Image 1 (tube, helix red, strand yellow):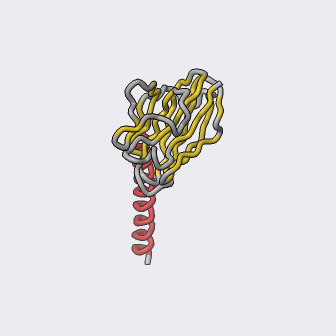
Image 2 (cartoon, rainbow, N blue to C red):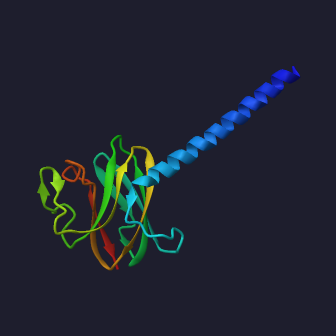
Amino acid sequence: MLHTRRAFFALVAVLAIASVACSNDSSSSSAAGSTATSPGGDSGGAAVAATEKDFSIAIDPTEVAAGEVTFTINNEGPSAHEFVVIQSDTAPGDLTVEDGLVSEDGLTVIGEAEDIAPSTTVPLTLTLDAGQYVIICNLPGHYQQGMNVGLKVT
């Protein structure tokens, strides 16, 4: 009986270690798609919660102060998405589209997170000047199906 108990506790310990290792792998790989991020993290800048679904983007709040802004992007959809932050006075739904993609030529792309897998959360920290911004998913057809939202930075 003592041998069985030891085997049971050894198995529980191995499963607990494996569980922790797997959870750490998923959190580090979800951030790998971020580009153009600023170092810092918890520097007191603005925080924006973003939710992507098939086919919408919602952010809260929709207005922030200029400076460092950290987006926490949660992909709740069954498809991979992007999160592209563009400084533009153009209305969110009025960007130029060519072959199902927003033409990024001539646009001021501040930063983006690419390949955000379903059911993952990715941080993206950018330094934003005062002005109007459009946030889009620029995968084929996604922008045209409603994956765009405005952000005001004061």
